[in-house]
Image (cartoon, rainbow, N blue to C red; front, side):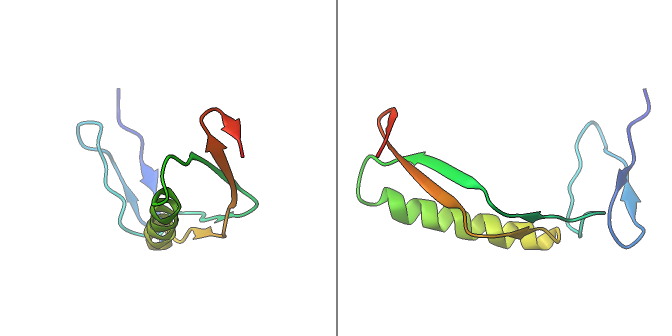
Length: 83
């Protein structure tokens, strides 16, 4: 079976090699991720900082592909129950 062509922005495309591909350019039709929820369990006081770091890295990585990410609504879980 022939591998699919991955269509990127700027009239570029690529084909996976051995089932793998790396995207380093803007995707064909980038979107804005808005009105979304991030759910996480808080076990110690540093978990909030770790979540903030994760969201910052997610936003930075998504910019590479032309994707915009707004701030999420956070749901903090204590065990299996929301706080």
